Length: 117
Image 1 (cartoon, rainbow, N blue to C red):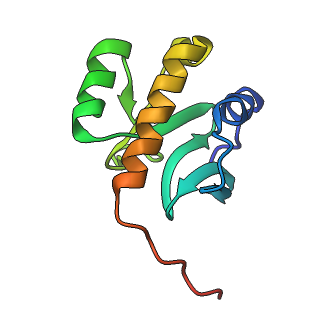
Image 2: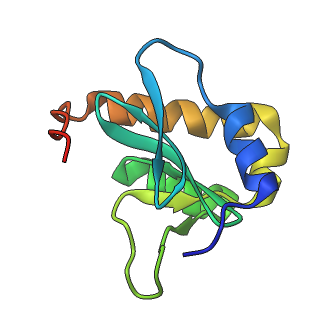
């Protein structure tokens, strides 16, 4: 597993919504954000990814050049897209995608917390 890059972590933290229903916890040992137990924003190495509806995934791919998130080659994570660095540099555009991701995750059935090991 790659280590989370400083730029990716700063990007994640800069766009992480500060709301009572948003929780931050690690996934793959890297920062990720959840709502209702569903991940919607995260870091993997030097990449920042969002979770999007099918329509928004197609739109993101077509309009901003987003790519499917694959933590391992040939092992895509369904519903997750990596947004290019250019998107993260445009605060308004990036917040639009983070907001879409958060809204989509809110619409998913809430997950029950797993019991501690």
